[in-house]
Every structure is written in structure tokens, then in C-alpha cells.
Length: 148
Image 1: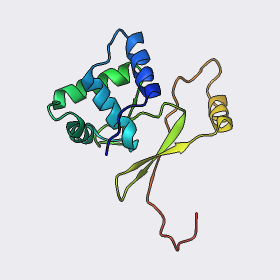
Image 2: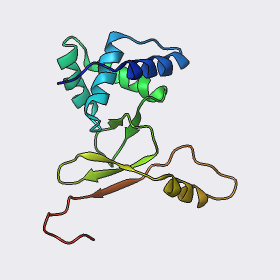
Image 3: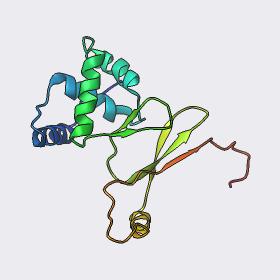
Image 4: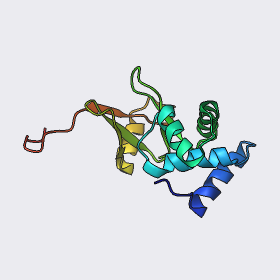
């Protein structure tokens, strides 16, 4: 069951949209609620299906527009894996992704600050990164197999 936004999340939504000249609408609030509910990197179709549970009349075009607006104002980021559908991630902290080839699920991997610092240190002189995107692809190991 999808819960309503917390006051903190609602303020975050309002602030981010306001900075880009946008307003909070019931549709945007519903889509943002869906993204925060499971944090499982849903595709637009998955967001649409979940949003219809919260707001039955919402259209697929509205969900696309909400997601595009959220990406544009920095509320979520797009996660792309090869030729698969774009997924949406509300975790804006520096992190990597692991895509399970068996299930298609995408998992967040926390990157400690020292790893981020080390990655930035290998950039060419005079360059700084705005975003670091690291993706791992593989399968869950069987419980009785040794770790690699």
C-alpha cells in the first residue's frame, strides 16, 4: 500500500519544483509518492500502474510529464541499462547500481565518501565531475556458493 508523502518529502518536492518555476499538483504529488514508496527503480509503465492505484484518472502522458519534470529539477535521476526501459531513481546521493540479470531488479549500492574522492582523483587535470554513474551487472550468488 502506498503511503502519503511525509511533510519533509512534500517540502522537498515543493522546494525543488519551485526553484524551476513549477508548482506542486496532485498528479506530481501522486507520482512522487509512488517513486518514494518502494525505491525499486521503476520504469514509467510501473510508475503509471502504481500511480493509478493512488489516482485512478491519471494518464500515461501525465506520468511521463511528471517524471520529465522531476528529472529536470533534480528530484530523480534516470537510470539506463543498455536497451532496456529507462528507470527512475529518487536516491540523489552518490551511489552505484547493481542490475540483477535474472530478475531485472536494480539495487542501490552506497559509495563511501573515500571511494567518491578516489574516483574524482583519477580525472584528467582541470576536470571535475558533476555526476558519477557506476553500474554493476550480474546475478545473485547461490547461497551455498563461495563468494568471489
